[in-house]
Length: 382
Image 1 (cartoon, rainbow, N blue to C red):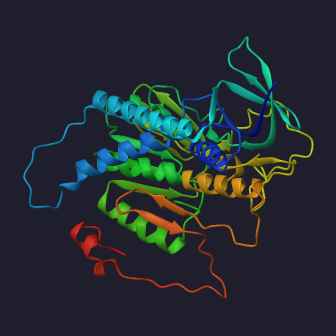
Image 2 (cartoon, rainbow, N blue to C red):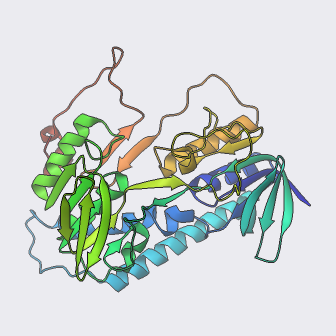
Image 3 (cartoon, rainbow, N blue to C red):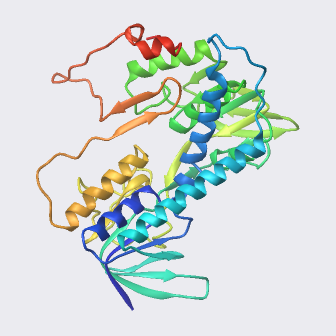
């Protein structure tokens, strides 16, 4: 049986950070991953969305400037190859960092076996036990679909499928107004699509400050062909020929030529074939952790999306660093480091930490018109 001081499950941003930090601190470390290094963030969610945003921003940027140019045409095959190349390059770089840190990288699947042990499958026919002193689970999350709201690989799509598009939608129905939905809505609108966003809550970007979101929403709907419908619970989505029809819980229908599903995400708990007795969970199935990312199980930590919102790569990395500190016995009374949440639209929407109104809170509001970059960039509003 192989034995390690630290075993990390998951090859996404949080798992990579935890393994690197652990090995750098002298812990004999193994990282077990069942997706290419970089995880979903690099291969199917975060990086592809940023590629779409870069294309949209570059295409839209010339408007309003003293430039003359012909109409832009998006080469979808070139975009697919660009995303693949960027994902491969990023994955190779992250693997190099892990190797240089001394991390043992094990490709395959892992499953909880018992306290101190995991089961590792390098293939369907190869099984072995690996013992650990400390375990960090960074399983990430996956998109949550409903029986009547799921992609069909044609005109009902989701983030992972977006690079396979061969045209820009004429009218896109965006189901979900969180980070993913808002970023993709901006990207497609900037590329010329009419976009209708259906958001269950009272505002876009529900984890962001309401005043900031109001200003951003006003800018988005004034400068782009975007309509925002709040208070809409999506009940069903279907394709009829070249039309997509989305039905709300109240029976209202919304019609476009494409539908994009970005309603929510759920924790990937596949590492636990059966949840261990005593493992505490949060509503929605996420894993409960303390300030140091410790679960209710001894020597077992959880980081990243599987611990709930906000689901951000930089939060996962921050949790990884704090978990390693706890493993090294560096627990103290310092508060949890704040993390930055950024929406990469144009303009960006950024929040550092949690903005909560209260008697001890103070805020300052500045006018965009006084910001030189915003004025030059033609988004001085709010």
